[in-house]
Length: 441
Image (cartoon, rainbow, N blue to C red; front, side, top):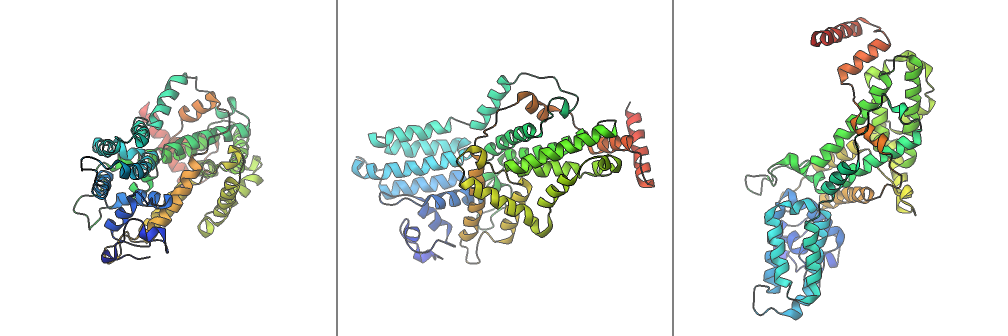
């Protein structure tokens, strides 16, 4: 359904009946977000609009518009207050505010947002029926789960000595796959849905001269931290393989990580799976032909096939759909785990953003695009809420987060020391690396 400005309906008219909105003016979309005594927007609409609206209007301004409409439509600025009217309307606006604070808590870390929230709750608070719910919304603003989790973890986890290598503290592939899943789900739990939009936010040419976000880095910090974890795991795998002096030990580490990757695949942890494969395919590792020749690699090639980028990662996407179906019908948290290959998820969202305009030529918001964006992000939101069913191994988790890893040059140097350079290019690089190391000592 395409709505023209002159056809702007009453609240919910375009949602309660008829086909879904494909485009509308920003004013119309905001109007449809605001509940009344007899109308509440569909949950899918609330999520899609709150997720995408930040591309056109900063969250504080959006909340201000919502509050203004509520005050005007429900006559909340009059005295005495029509308590019968508020009894019907109050629970609905509080439901909207609760959904907003629970799904996008980072929006409410600005003082302006909290002030507006308190104001609208204060206006409807005289009714006993809504006072408790109002207190619940305010209470939500006092909780920042990710900070609390990190603080508690810092106090509970005592420093542990760093072991020499991964096999010295864990020789069970399933255990390591479980602990990697803990790390992945911990990172996922911190990523808010708005970060996917803010990662690609650009100035809206129809909304003045300033973009909706000032400090962009702060708005995507959890997403960036997750990408850094992926890169760390890649380099950790490569370091563990290149570090042993003996060929037999290196082959043993390769076989171990192949088994870990297979267990990650079985669990549904595709992000760790791809990080392990990527680490094993780094040039300093892949050039160790004698080491690879001694390792049993049949299972590795099967896993590589599953994550083959051919056909836009067709094999992986097929496996992901299977894991998603298992998750939807699962009875246990173990079967609900779906951790997507995160870089590809970001890439899909990027191309959706780049391939479709935010606004149509007539100035309307291309809401059909944001419904699809909300579908993709919403699926991720479901996956990230799964509680990890595996018992934590603090020593192993500590090692994964703190074990020293080689830089790219360090990996090449270790690789050349393990298996001598085979051509002139490698010999020249080895010579340069050794000179560099000697020059620093």
